[in-house]
Length: 96
Image (cartoon, rainbow, N blue to C red):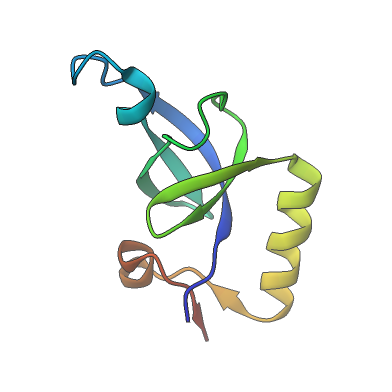
């Protein structure tokens, strides 16, 4: 099962040398409970370092407020759903 999960943006790469349109090629490093993944930020052009984003299959889909992100992470923890290294690569979350 694939879920869109919140993660915290810890770095941003502009990549403006590609076709001159930096927003389409912008990527970021996002932390999912210590697992760091590079994701596309094309859909969230206003995102900043420290923001939480909802990520699905390698794309940040929306910016969420920290309270909403923490609430979602707490629900996932209560369900014992944790990111695992292999599933983080695949964009999936497993139930342990």
